Length: 195
Image (cartoon, rainbow, N blue to C red; front, side, top):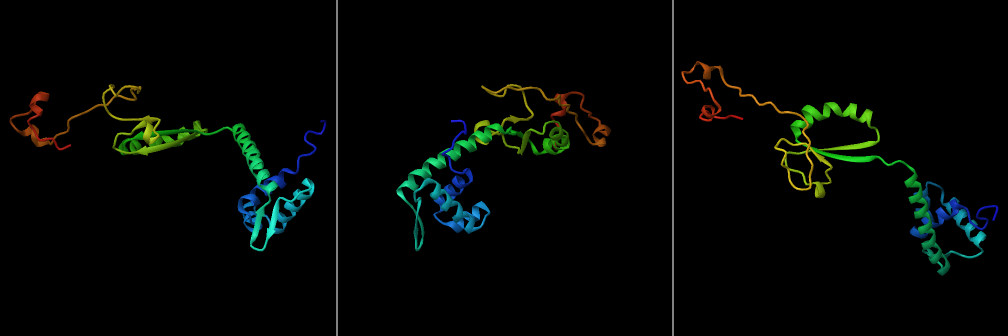
């Protein structure tokens, strides 16, 4: 078979046939394909002529598939789905990465760095979920979460230290004017904590 597939009809005609078979209407098929109704009808006439059989019954209220057309439409739909899948597999897919962070962390640390990240990794579709609630990796579709806490985060999860956190006590200058300045963490517990 030196010519590949000599009995194969035009792929464009097969595509038009699949759309018409789905809608059973030339006008709706033309709208989906972005062509004229006459062009759709011409493709179908040409396909029927090349196959030497009728695929559609022309009715007063529209179209109906013949028995041959019904069987052929299922096979053509499957074949076009296979071509579509093969084509999608050729194209590089963007990797999706969903990161859950607190709103404060997102605004103060992550968002200022997103431009540089996107420039360095254009193939990664980064999605940021800014929430104070704990994220569930399976149900929320989260790949990575950044939270404050201790490394013991639960079974089946890995944790990495992102950065050290420094906590300082901030107090009113009047506290140091008082006679009882706290000198230890335990003494500090007796004072009112605002935040």
